[in-house]
Length: 429
Image (cartoon, rainbow, N blue to C red; front, side, top):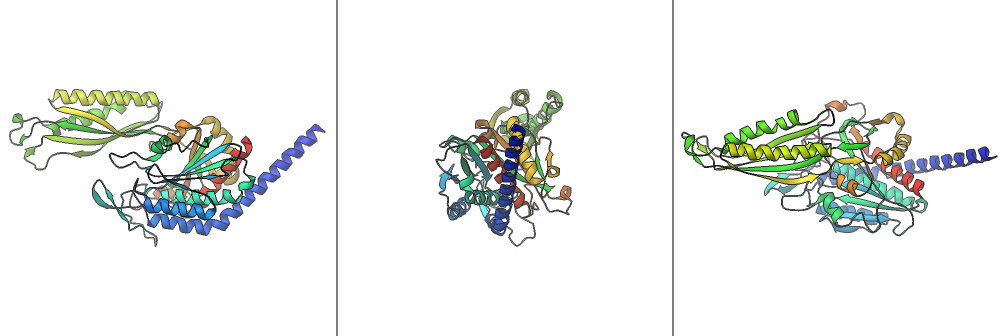
């Protein structure tokens, strides 16, 4: 009798789950054309970090249409809405980033961006060159589906539309770090957070993720060197910051190759910008360089930072140059909680197909979603954006003028975010 009863309960639970999956699919399909139109609007109206004014205004408008009451002005231009506010049960947070990049679009599409903005004091073209337009449209569509199912949801859902994932302008706070500081994970207190990123080099329908470290910590830095200006024909009458910079760059490259235990995890130190001098025959007085550090292991990160400081100080001293090392934006490792990963992986496999959900290696890209994961357990995953039948390996990389992801990816994103939310809340109720 007990076995029969257990089988009956399991059968009923499975049947209810299947019915809910079918309802979710129907609702996604019902809203898919609108989701696509929203994606196109956000793409055409791309805005830079902390300047997403029209974007946040449109997000708030769409949330009100759904029936939610958005809060605006969070972390400057962020938007927050809560489903089932005050309802007993667990609280799930879902996050989408909303900012674009200073990139000129070359993709031949009717909804290409012709927007310009101000970046570092200069007017620049602005494009969604990393897919944040799709993330925004996906989260709005997820909110619409979950709102329709709100009476069946045993808990609350926070929809977080986050500005400045690409980093706030110099001298400003922003992004996930500021959202956390302003209490976006409080009142009601969030139990778990889910986020996704579209990927141009992965085929539509595919989902890729891993437990533990999935994306690197990032530490952006600036090195200022001050020497003594002189004529290029008599270098012995000055102190040359350019020669010092060249020695410093070469030495910095040995941090990874000679100090990192690379069998443990990857690490990268890159100097991406160097500015100094105006003429071939003038040794300048000063120079500055910009660089980035990517690490996937906390102890390795500590070693990199220590060695960078030692190299900058010692190479500068050896050349009689004054040096200043300063750090700009820093993000922690994006870390998928192993227990939450094990709990939610079957949900992704069920709705996307087990053959479409695969384990991935950690990457040295970085994400400020990690600030949310420092506070509560979270899962971050990737969905494919390359149209089926195309060679995904030949797709243009993110942050480039030819970057493109297909609209057909939207369905996978909504399906994944909706299912993760429903399954977690149902299991925890």
